[in-house]
Amino acid sequence: MKRNRLYILAVATCCNVLCLMACAQEHTANEKKLTLANAISGTTVLLNNQDAIIPVKSLDKKNIAAVSLSFAYSSVFDSLANKYDKITSFSADSYKDSVNLNDLEDDLKYFNTILITIDDQNINKPKYINFINSISKNKQVIISFFGNGPGLKSFDLIKSPVVWTAQNNADAAAIVPQYIFGGIAAVNKLTTAYSARYTMGSGYVTTATRLKYTVPEDAGLNSNNLKEIDAIASEAISQKATPGLVVLVAKDGKVIFNKAYGTHTYDTNVPDKVTDIFDLASVTKVTATTPAVMRLFEEGKLKLDTNIGAYIPKARTTPMSNIQVREVMLHQAGFIPYIPFHDYVKTGDYSRDSSAAFPTKVADNYYIKKGFFKDFMWPKMLNSPIRTRGKYVYSDISMYVMKDIVEHISEEPLNQYAYENFYKPLGMQTAGFLPRNRFKPEQIIPTEDDKYFRKTLLVGYVHDQGAALAGGVSGHAGLFASANDLAIIYQMLLNRGSYGGVEYFKNTTVDMFTSKQSNVSRRGLGFDRWDPDSTKHYPSELASPQTYGHTGYTGTCVWVDPSRGLVYVFLSNRVNPTVTDKLSNLKIRGRIQDVVNKAIDESKK
Image (cartoon, rainbow, N blue to C red; front, side):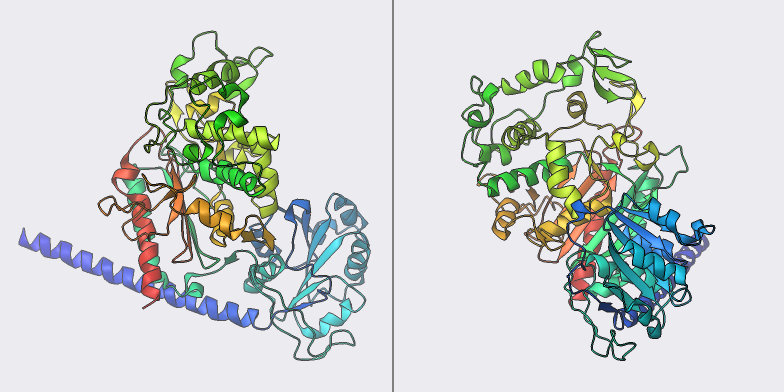
């Protein structure tokens, strides 16, 4: 027995040594990566930016194509550019039979912004220069040139912006798009004259306006101190808390960690990817409904101390008529927590096929009858008893109510309003309701294998039963997104309202909604917050009192900690194949958050 214990100890020690060696290697490798990246950034120059086209603005008005003119690292360039906005990739090499690339130009007719990548091995090819000259006559062109400086003289007659780096490698290809979109600020000038136009001292200066994608060391953190995230993620999967998950960490406007773990379901080998789309559940409340409320409040169209009846005609003869909007946003309106609407669905209320009588799709092969929400669900909510007014009782009904108020004031459906005002202009490509209308099922993480209500595996149809019966668009659930999309909108909130050179909210609006606004709970307006009860360790043991965000029933959360410059995103499908509390019982979300918190605190010492 003693010998076995010694053997186990020896193995454990050996594993720890190997882990330390691997960790040390990762830290050393990332330090080298950062040194190399800084060397590239230190010599990258922005030219011809007299019209301030870079950083790219107004993404909602852009349709962007990336065109590789035989650039070897175009896939790396395009992948990074795709983190900022949807990029459609083209390669001149696919048009070998086209002497003058007219066919390529024809295929670009639907795009108004063209990102061209070219290196010094191809800069002297007349067909490429002719193509650039031609396309730049009626489209906004941005040139990324990789290679020796003398090649710049080929652009002497071109007015389009040029981002130039002397490096021609994958590292440079990952850095240059970040200049274009404002992830990295341009600061350098030419130290040599290369032509009559590109003289010594030429160069434009910009400011960083969007997320940067880099290594932890770039934010002052040691990669070693984040390795425990891998172990906690493995524990979550091995303990069947969730089949897979994605973790993203942004510090000081820099995405320093974004990793996927596990598989879509336990019985598949399809790996989770960082680009996968998750059902956000109640994170919808603070990523769709609350921003809409904030915008309408700021515009003076919605007043927090006005009652519900003033905005919702149907509510005027109901118990909730005189309740103020502020009470609804704080979960102090007295609403009951939720109504299990799926338990009220009778045979004859739904059909396996769509028709005029059953128009609302709830899931694959499940359609609810016309008017089910308007004639049954909504009146039942409006007339539900008010029992606990003035006390904090978390209720989904609150955000059904806020959705209806937003739609009355904005005169638009909530999904359309959020997309037009936030997701599209911010460059959030996957965020939105009803993802099956836009994306292939393979891109969407499956939630519950619903044996009780819809009798199917839910892929891209909202898990929440009430939101599903409402047609998939609701104020409390129904939003889907990738981790990167959430990082973008929460970085905007961490910036106190600004992102990509656009002010989405005034600082004071963000401060008000995200700070503690209740005398009886920890809540902000719409936002959940750090709990002052030290026995709860919510949302994590080391979270600061400034922390705000929200969790979601499907196993999601996003937390912003202004004191640490932190955006933390955790996405999972813990309800697959069916609901389990292991994710919460094992404190997976909070423990990963604290690995990050510790790493940040360690970096300050």
